[in-house]
Image (cartoon, rainbow, N blue to C red; front, side, top):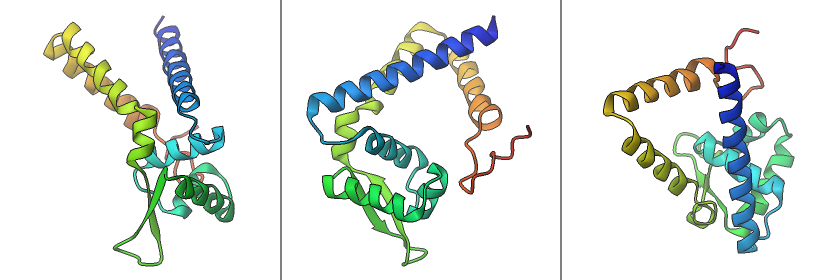
Length: 153
């Protein structure tokens, strides 16, 4: 039962995410390809990666990553910021323009508000604890060097 519930929730989260993301971008005529949308989402999720970190995570060559990133920069969806630690590197950020079009933050805030309305503070705290365990221990992101995030297989 638990496995079926987790599979169903994962499927519904991903389908809703893809549906809303593509519908929103199609309506706005952004000129982004599906690959560019996924690249921008990865940049946002990675939290200011360098070009090399982005390339390693996406399993693409650095020149290929730079090409995709430069296209997103030209279209105004990603910006590069010179690293304060290493002036040779640039940190990548999605722009407000991208955030406005994708609107994921609004959906998350709305879902959290509905959760708080429906459940007790204790239940919300337990749910938060469970999500943390899932995120940090059970489903860690793979290492950006192509490893498996320390997860034993």
